[in-house]
Image 1 (tube, one colour):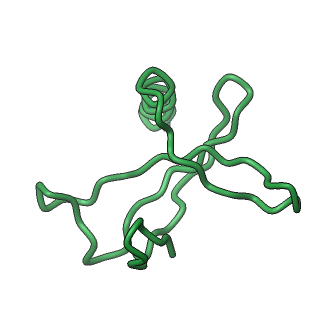
Image 2: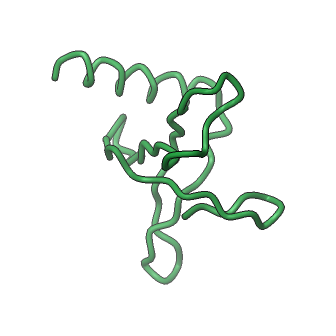
Amino acid sequence: MLTDEEGGEHPFRVIDVIEVEGKIYAILLPDAGDVGEAGVEEAVIFRVEEDENGEEVLYDIEDDDEWERVAEAYSQMAEEE
């Protein structure tokens, strides 16, 4: 379950976790019924880091170049499977 900026909760499922350039990323898909503007499920990518308590926390990727590198790495990995 992910919570948006307005406090709304959205169910997601982790479909993969990948490492790119030494960082860990989670690829998530919305559960049924939560679709993007085009009416199709859209995967989202978050960087996974540990907080001060050792808990894993998901962070938005704000850098466009970083997002593109991760999306490309995931796309290539999916094609190979």
